[in-house]
Length: 122
Image 1 (cartoon, rainbow, N blue to C red):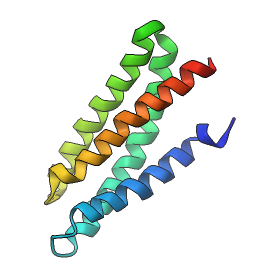
Image 2: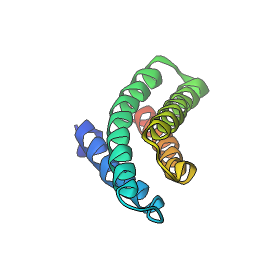
Image 3: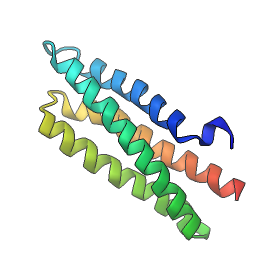
């Protein structure tokens, strides 16, 4: 198994990248808002990435043809937007839309790229 298929690599990368983004997106607000947003996003991304990776693998394996490409990406997007929006809202993230926009786009792209890589290797 290559390093790109290891769950911990996906989780750690997501935590660092998206946690940093959330801190940056909330930089105009007083501390600790950027720090809290960054930690919340980092943890969310780690959990979502691990869960999403497994969902994508299961859905991609279960469906063939166009559905095997579309449904895993759709599942990744729905999981991502629901969790990101609700948890950041509960955490009181001030720049909510800016905070979740990039992680949602990245999660959707990740879902597409990972699905394609799985389909090509099977």
